[in-house]
Length: 534
Image (cartoon, rainbow, N blue to C red; front, top):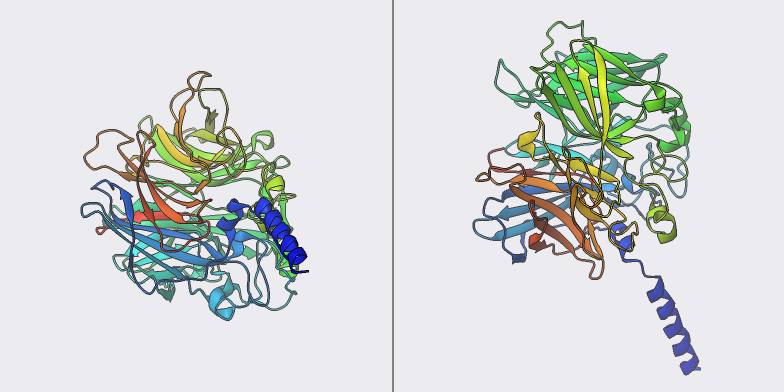
């Protein structure tokens, strides 16, 4: 009997081993936190100029004792800090949960408070009274508030202030809206802000948008935020007869802020019943014209804050944008060029394959065949004098064999934002010979060079069973070329389950150093590398 039992146990262990999916471990809950900086091991040599803090944000807990999130994007957020000293070849690691109102109201992450989620919870949360303040799970993007604090943001209007040293959540960012009464009641916002240098004060201000539902439509306000006074000033307004599912980012360059709107509509009243954003959204990209709105940031003519330009994108050509790559002026400031990751349909975001669906991500058969990333890297040029779009072109992403790739989270050397850049860095799936979803790679793409079979226009870092996220470029101050610098990439080893910070030479795309975390972290969204003087 004992022998038979042993055989059964061995058989079950064999089946479980065959079914083990290392990639799924990237989406497993992590409850561990650090009390302070933990010294970590460095392998290789970190470039001396890499001295500062890499902050990363992402979900960390999707399962609770009473209820579970079914979409990874909904998970309770975490902030992680990698402190790097390239001169001394030292590094430390810190990581803490974001104590948002949502987290605190969910019994410190042991339950899930009633709020609107990407997908329904399991078991499903019943409709009922809810506090919109509990939408502040700000685990998407961040910006520095001052030398002592960062601000973490999401697509809802609330933001959280985090202590830069301890990573403790200080609380909700309290704006001084004494000069912005129209800001009251805003519920939605963008996750990716821009920066604008105020010519009168010399201060670099935050630029973003906020929005709120009104009778018959949706009101959008473009604002500037002084980080020294926390005062917001509305410099642009827009009234729509429909509510966007998301305006994830705003493009800011020189004196202009630009919004690109594809017709993906959200039925806000329906979300109050379903408590589910993706259940209440409709992809109408090819049914309605898209829009491009350009606002002037130095506008002091309030309340006359209408867009400087409003342009249609014909429905046959319409697209949706999560992330911008760059925005810059050319031809003596007469032309505004936008570069971005364009979605020609919402397949892979809405519908049968919802972005962040936990079940899909943990099922190899599904994820290997589902749509992923944007359809194209796209460049659109606007003639500001004529008030019209003059050209739109797709930027190829092709290797030397002629194989094309779909990218996301593409960024450039930050010193080149606002002027034409020729090199972008992002990530892709289905790299290598096996071409599975989990075969992730960091891609360096030439944005200015035409790709040809036999030559291509990309370089790639790909390692078997190394799951890599967003690359962050750190420029070499002694360098003279656009790709003089390195990339910081947080990845997870499939075989060991270890989380590592990879440091890649941006020219060769080779790993020059790795830093190992003391415990694994889940997949993260975005981050920033901040130095002592910023």
